[in-house]
Length: 538
Image 1 (cartoon, rainbow, N blue to C red):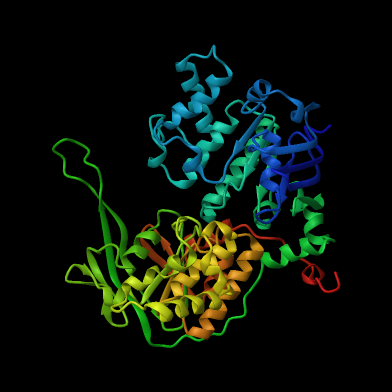
Image 2 (tube, rainbow, N blue to C red):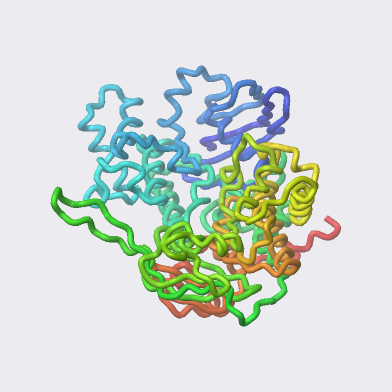
């Protein structure tokens, strides 16, 4: 018997169709993977199930939870159902948590809202037990800790603890691992699967990454443009998919861009024995502050025209090293040279060197000021130049940058909210290109994108590298992306480079135990028959 039964659910917001006759079901103890690109309707299906819809939403059909139609349930009754019978885990744990409350109070609050007779002490005791179930034992993670004191994976465990504190019958997880590194992602997936097994609850796992659910879901549902286009058992759907869109998703998941190996032996970036320390809080009034070594004796070279990958877990020092390379933080030891010149000179950032580097960040929307039009946004790097272009020359450079990433000059008159996620990332790349840098640092530049959009951006980066002779430092926790786009790879652990070499060689025969752990933790699709990738005539 189904726990959740969605029947012919249609949804519109202010008259715009969002969902079209969506039907799916979930049994107790079952894991359903809901797959689709941004805008496919997968998250709105979850919000409709929770009845957390925006103003102007109009829904029809049925959403039956143990036979009760949630579309006709009153708001007071829904408040009793949310949290108690249906729990939800969101994508960004820092946004989902209250930064002003300790983790213990936040889990306890969930318990007390649904059981007013529960004392504070008993609620905190149960909160501690729930957090321990989610991998946060009290001796290591006191209830008094705040979200900012935890890593991304630890914060996501707190969000999961809040969602399962009352042992709901249904858990909805909306992109719960997108921003996490591969080992942390694997741990969260194992945790979710264990909780489903222990509590007998159903799990609706929403994601754009097929590899994430292929190893844990019982069934997979593919959505596109608000419709369910294909559904079936996970193993069967992957190997015997019939819909051309499903096959296109599988193909995009393992996409390899055509790249020209154009690296020269001349080094562009030289990192020599770099050390970066941070001061720790004092443990006593008169105690000396401790030191944390974030980067320890790191050395490597990046050659002209080369694409170099940098991988590692959260907290390994990747971001600290990136800031040092960009001249945003001074190092305590060693040196960083670009084109033979120091990134820091006389304890100050060397702006002559800085203009030769640009960076593309993970979140293409958060990278821009939403109040400004695209023309102003992508022209921001002009301030690094000794003489900034004006008038017709400035407009011509903006148009050229937009056209180089597959957009049009007309787009410069629009605001950033008028573009999709993939288009925003193209604009971010255009901004990086506009002053014709020698080195572009890509910091998780495709990790938040759908698989098909990710494939397009990887193709774009390969094309730009060939056309303009660009050099890339590609930082990512997605090992499949690193393998697809880089010539060599560095593996970083606890502030040190533990392995480096040609990408294929490192991935096929890793020498270091940590590299083997990373590769083993990475989700991957099973081998797919050749006909799956053949969409001709479909």
